[in-house]
Image (cartoon, rainbow, N blue to C red; front, side):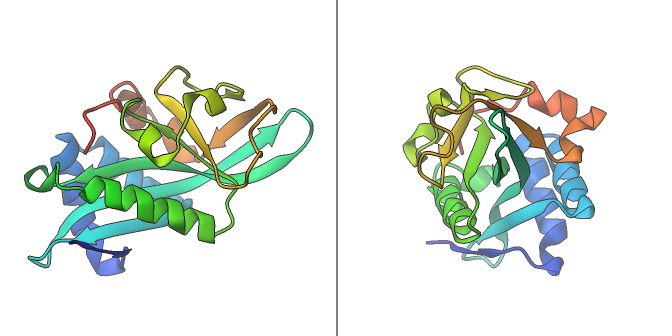
Length: 183
């Protein structure tokens, strides 16, 4: 089993490599770097392989929920989750998602949103139905939400405000291609 722990400063080069290898491009790595530089990272976890190398990475960034009733809540955006190609399909991605959800819960965040594979993320409790009431740059079955505070999203309309890095031009290309095969 892989040990999962928070990222450390000496992990950054390996995290970048894992994201580039997993996605076959540098855009996700650039997103991670920019979120970190902007101070918008809420949780960044790595899965350490038995070889001492990072096998996987997951990042949760600041996301504001702004409800039409005037309320607001602190939430997280899950993006990206990456596993080295030679380590995929071994449960590393699932372990990272579960550990990340636990970390967000421990931080007293209200919810998590993800844009991802609609057959993968529901196993963790993400729901497209919960996300339908949220105005966001995307919609559909791939846009899902999970409540960490029970009832925070039910029967409420509102909008999500992602961290600034998600609006960068280089990231725009990523948004159209995020529904890749589950890790």
